[in-house]
Image (cartoon, rainbow, N blue to C red; front, side):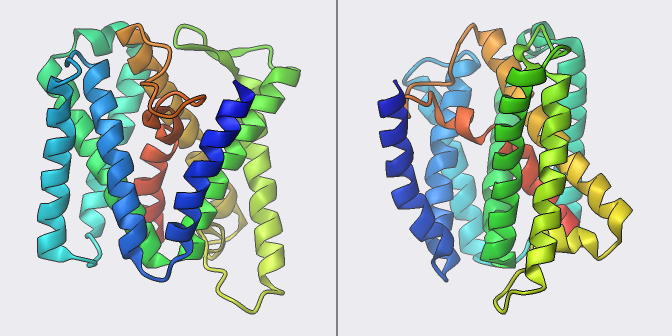
Length: 277
């Protein structure tokens, strides 16, 4: 299993890193669309669609992406859109995590599928917007989410005693979440300290928050970290409602694409919104 995970991770990085650091946003945009299309198919499968009928989800997403691309190309989307997107994410996460997987399962299929299309499309657009802001800015968001995920896992394994959401994801703990927040704080402090000695671009989510002072930096990082954990829990809730362990087996050793993107999905729109202040 470990060998399979490593091989899959290496293959993904071989495609992702060149697209991430290429000067043109076209390559990352294309890769992002492919990932979102795969995730949308998994979303359909987790929400009642059959193997073939689930392909309607990526078909709709692709049509919406192409419509956006043909009209706006690489133009920035307004702050209002990201405010609405963030508000929808917040309301969705709070309501369904509070009421559990049964509330999700009892919702209409039309609502679940429509919500999935909106949230996944928004995440894909946010990925492109973050790249347009700057490669370093996008990289800092990715590092924030990855750092939070890794810290939550190891701190939770070592010191986790109090369950964060026992009915949704028993393995996650409050201690793990606190560890994730502290790890992200340390990452930001290291980044800001190092930025004083770097001669190349160092615009990041950390430096943008730091402009408003230390309280805003620590609060903003805490919100982003908690949002990443909430995104993970939200996808776990959907899988629990569907009775599935993974969103699919598209990524051998890792499960599905949604399993890898869950924490990023709500963080990307929020980070883009923060960048506009």
